[in-house]
Structure formats: structure tokens, C-alpha cells
Amino acid sequence: MKSEYIFLALVVPGPEHPRKKLNILMQPLVDELLSLWGGVKTQDATIKKNFNMRVAYLWSIHDFPAYGNFSGWSTHGRLACPVCLCDSKAFRLHNGRKACWFDCHRRFLPTDHEFRSQANAFRKNTVVHDEPPRHLSGEEVLAQINISVADTDNFGILHNWTHLSCFWQLPYFHKLLLRHNIDVMHNEKNMGEAIWNTCFDVPEKTKDNAKARRDLAQICNRPSLHLKLKPNGKWDKPRSPFCINKNDKPIILKWFQELKFPDGYAANIRRGVNFTSRKIFGLKSHDYHIFMERLLPVAFRGFLPENIWMCLAELSFFYRQLCAKELNHDTICSLEQQVVVLICKMEKIFPPGFFNPMQHLIVHLPYEARLGGPIQARWNYPFERKIQQLSKKVRNRARVEGCIVEAELVEEATNHLSLYFKPNVRSVRNKIPRYDDGTCTFESSCNLQIFQYPGRCISPRGVRALSTEEYEAAFLYVLTNMPEMDEHFK
Image (cartoon, rainbow, N blue to C red):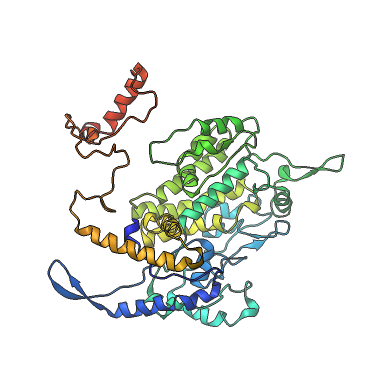
């Protein structure tokens, strides 16, 4: 989704977040959607005639906290999951003092699955026979909202409804199967962050801290991981099997420091590697996207037990299939079944404190992909980039909203006018190539497409002869990136 196809429909004034008052501020947008649902006369430029154009709300895309403000279901506490709604099995950790979704996923398994009858593999002496929560229809959700909003005494106990979203005024809203999207971008980032910090045992960020071990002793039957009291009165925390040995951490960090990617594939991760603190600083959401889908199985292989590594490799493959550009119906249906088993395997490995709402929401991602299609149209990457572009347009800090609106109007007008420019005119839709020496008179004597792009030498050393290894690497690169060779590779 390109920036020129994203239009700014509404600006919410700041500087404070409106929270539940967002409903009031979005009412003009709802009024326009109601008007557009009836249809407006629009000219078709190709046939030179007017037609009745109708516009409908499809779905909303936002991070998890904004999900609660937008939908009316609070995404905090024990009932934070907006898909399970009131039928959640989450509980509060006594020592960690936060909501936990540990052992809440066996109910999603088939009734005859072996995990359901394992009494001590998850919670102590617990066998699960419950059925998964039922997906409510739009009419049932609306009836539940109308009853629950006024029932403030049971908020957080029986329901998490805070208000009725203004979008329920749309006549077709209750018929939508997917009204709001769980953001895969933030889900992937939070999962990658949790795995990295826990496996590397990063202080103050690991999910396997002393409080987590105390909760583990209360909930699970894993005596080898319980805290042990030393003769000097201090507590000893046994090393978990999913924690990487301290002597192996520099090896993994060195691998990250020497890592190279194709141009434009990922950020320069190696610049954030710090051997002193044994961390990688400055990782962004897209860096965790690359880490989860490509680097995780390679980086940790050989440093973790085989069963743990295999579970993390399956998680990486799950995200890779989920984020594919093309989704097959059979693949998505298979992912819906596999993801439940995958999370149950992780519950056998990691402590209860590891499983917060983000780890639980993975269960619902394949279902939403089956309804909404490929993730590329439903995650936050294009909108985060758009918000960054909008923030750069602010010149007067005292009039932030005005600066954004005025600059965006100019940009929308120029994007529209650029459609009528000649093909050789540089515009938003005809940008200068990334590698271009600026000349317009470049002519190549070779007909191969890979040599049709002008460029300049960027090395300060000038021209030099290639070694045999460098020549073979360059020759292989040229062959594998030529469209003319595609038929031969097939």
C-alpha cells in the first residue's frame, strides 16, 4: 500500500489523548460514511458518464491499545482479548501481578488431542475438557454492549466494554465478520522481543525472572526450575534449558555483527551489537520481522536443546507462511490447527510469566487471515510510515494539526496532478532510481536488462582488479538476477 493511496480523512486534535472521547471526534467521519453508503454521483472519466458511487467501511487497522479505544472493548486486564471477549480463561499472577494466558490454549485443541489429558505438563493436576470460545455474530455483540456498558460494577470481571463505538451506527456494521484487525506488525515485534530477551536472559527484560520462578512453583510441576535457598541466605535461580549459555552468547553476537543482507532487504543490524552488555540495541519493528522469519532458526541452532529449537523454528515458519504475499485457503486452515499445538508446545517450555496478551493473540491470527486475506493489506507498516511522513511536515509546533492538514492537501493535489504528466517527467509516481548517477543520456551497449541502469563508483579507492573469488561471486550474482535466465533456472 503506497503512500499516495492513503488519504487523511480526519485529524484528532491534541496534545492529550481523547481516550473514550474519540467516539465524539470520529462522528464527522461516520456521518460521511453514512452519506457515502447511500451513494454520490461520480463521473467516470473513461466513458464520460456519471454513476452512483457507494463507499463502505471495511475494517480498522491499529496497534493493540488503540484497538480498545476504537472498538470499545478495553485491551487491559484479564479480559484483554477482543476475540474471546467474556469467555477468557486468563488469570492474574500472584507474584508477577499481571494478567497471564498460560494454559489457556488447550481448549482450542481437538477433543481427542493428547495434550488435553496431560495433567502435569502444563498446570498442576489439570486436565482440560472445555470447548473453545464461540465467535459471536454482530447482533450478539451489539446486544452484549448495550447490556454491559451500563454495568460498571462488573467491568473487568464479567466484561470489558467501556463504550459503544460510533461505527455501530452504520447499517451494515453488524454484518461484518472482521471489524477490527489484530496488528501482526506489533504482535511479531513483541514476540521477537520476548524470545530474544528471555533466551539471552537480558536483565530486567527477561520473562524468566525471580517473580516468574515463584509463580512457576505455584502453577506448574517443574521442580528443577524452582528457586533454591543457599546456606548464605540468598536464592539461587537454576539455569533454564531455553537460556543460552553465557559462553555461547558472544558467538551469536559475532554472527549478527558479520551478517550481511541484500540491498534494501533489512536495516544494518550489526551496528547495534554490543559485546560488553551482550545485547543488540536499536532494533525496530521491521528488524524483529526479519529476525522472527529468517534469522531465529539459524541464530539459535546448536545452542538450544533440539526440542526447544524445533519449537522456535516452527514459530518462525508460522510467521513466514502467515506473512506471505499469497495465501492459500488450505494453508490457512492448516495454520489454524497448527498454531494451537505450537503455543501449547511453548507453554511446556517457557514459564507462565512469558504468556501475555500478545502471545495469546497468535491463536486468532490465522482466522483473521482467512477472513481478511494477505497481511500486507492489514498490518501497520504503511500507516506507521505515513504517520512518520506527516510528523515531518510540522513546521510550527504551536499549530501541529494545521501544518499537517495544509501540507497533506498540497501533497494529495500534486499526487493527483502527477497522473497527467508525461512518462519522462520525474514525479511521485516516476521517481529517480535509487542507484542513478543523475544522467539522462545513459546508453548501454549491452541488451541485458541488468545493465540498463546507470550508476557511479562509490568506492574511494577507485578502480581495481577483482580476485578470482570476487569475480566468481559477481558473475553468480549477475546470472541469478537476470530476467533472461529465468527460463533456464526453471
